[in-house]
Image 1 (spheres, rainbow, N blue to C red):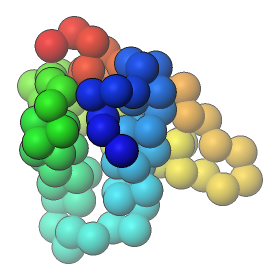
Image 2 (spheres, rainbow, N blue to C red):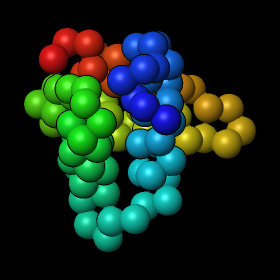
Image 3 (tube, rainbow, N blue to C red):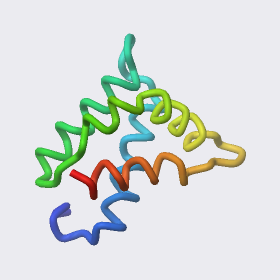
Image 4 (cartoon, one colour):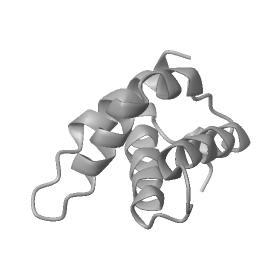
Length: 92
């Protein structure tokens, strides 16, 4: 799959889900959210699209809380994480 050929809306959905699933498995012993967001920036750069990492850093508590809501099995609330990721991708 070429990320450059995906519509912006689909890119945001796919990328957000990928990062949320990475965060959920908690692969990093310390600073999991910060490290997952750093990975997100590196991944985005490698795939040819920009991610405003400063926005994510400046709103770290919101990012973490929105990831928690995104990953709730019973009733996920994805809109919060999708909103900040939309801004991080579109506003760069």
